[in-house]
Length: 412
Image 1 (tube, rainbow, N blue to C red):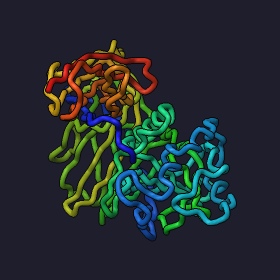
Image 2 (image 1 turned 60 degrees about the horizontal axis):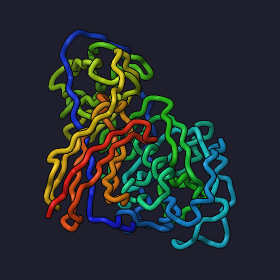
Image 3 (image 1 turned 90 degrees about the vertical axis):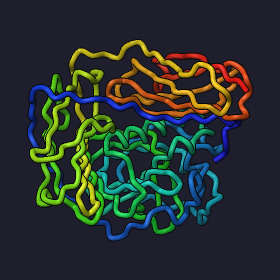
Image 4 (image 1 turned 30 degrees about the horizontal axis):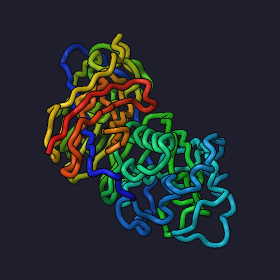
């Protein structure tokens, strides 16, 4: 990965949202189906050399010269059909440039089966064909830190797709055993024929959707890890509309006696923990901006295994996103010090881009998600070698229909 021209870095940290303990509204529980255990857990790490490094890396991140030939009109297809395509000849190696067959964008409706965070920072997701479960292939979500040299529109699509997957199914882990995912989704991505190194879940011809440019969850998502697999249900109903204060309960099956923690998360942010039965908390949804949210229950057992169940709902309390504002403290810093930028008034779970510019030159770029309340906290550290002067700090949503700016002064 090439470095930014500057020495200014931006880190994004999401704010924490609170919970209330009033009233009660209990939905129906439901059970997520079981999965087969993967026979092998060998992923792409054999070809990875570290963060933002792997075979054919520019092609995989749309940072190659051929990326401008990629058409963004997606063609519907299936996992089985993609896996039946002829593999290009001659044999591919790590330096093979983009092939003509790799300029097409495809969309598949798939069953999610397993994921893993690789050492190159990609999220490796194994897909199955719902009509033919024996057919599988891989989809990959690059980290935004590895796509800084891609065209802005392509980088935005990659970032939003990865954010959508994490929102829908929770973060991927690099630990051994954190592979099981149960859900369905529509996945849009660029065709890529990978080198064959024994990747878990690969198609017979090693075709992948790499990178993924769009992700839409079409059902509840469950993720299980560790040596023990156990059933987990939630009283939040997939696809429902919530208002006011809701009573949110988690129920664990045969392993209930071995629970270590039961955590409740909204839009990936922890809002409460249940210490004893019944494992429930009350959440005041009127604190969230109206619109889509993810409600997740994460249960850990004493043996270290976990289960994560994510439901996707909407809230409707008459709370709309306001005019966005940002504030930066301190407003004057010495090069090398950090600036904390607080953003408010955006929509829930929106991808925000933060840029630091001076004299029309972009010094830094970072992306992150807002909380359910439409807020985010961004931490910007100005490098010691940054020139003295006034810098423009801009925060806006994915397509920059909402945004706000402020200024900071940097001294030496």
